Image (cartoon, rainbow, N blue to C red; front, side):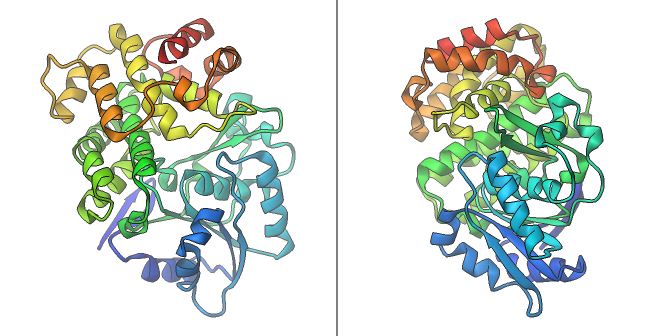
Length: 377
């Protein structure tokens, strides 16, 4: 077993959930735990397994209706249930959507006013206080790294998909058990894995100065690039699953530094009404095109990325990602995901205003993002 403290406390080992969950709930004095998850996790038996690890004497309330893209309505509904039962701790169980919802439920349950007031683009970071109940995050995918992240992405009632960001949103504990990902189907393994890989790439080339994050990002990229195809080809390969979970964790550890244009567009597109777009798949499709856009502004950093991915210095990074997506069975463009020109027109100005745009290595306007997304169709 390894115990890691970087941003938060992390249990990382095979079969660690049963021991760690009971220990941490007791250690944080939780008497009534609120579990946030989704219907798929419940159907797969993971909810029952994790609930059984909760010590006797701790009451349980379950919210298992997390949407594919968490919404403000879901946050309000879950927070009301949390308060109705007098809960005093939260467990997020699932992929990034459930973990993000769990974090923001803690915010909504303890802070007054519209959720928009607490989003990064509305200046909400300083409005979030250190009164959020303890959150324990248990990821069942290896992608978002939300278990160690300081943000929750929520689709507001006005249709914007915005980040709520604060160090107080980082879960008190992350329990990373690679065995929790063994049942993940190949396509979802590929999409979530490319999410982790994109985090490592984007944070490494982001403009902020953060040498520790750079080192973590390159290590995560080495793990993701070296294991994603193995994990997709053989979902029972526990070694590949372990390395992908580590890559996802490291990608989120590193993106405290900032992200960039890929996420600016995937956030904007992911919040569009009438579209069902998976975040990791969007990142995979958009990454090659943003790499090309950013090429004039990254200096030596593409060479560093290629070395981490075991590519020659003469390799074309964007072309490599395109071919990797193809081998993983991911869509070859936005159109294959259901994105169209009207959707791009709506998303482009939202991407320019997204908080991740500020750390993209090359200044990008709505017009630039419209052009990139059109090329990516």
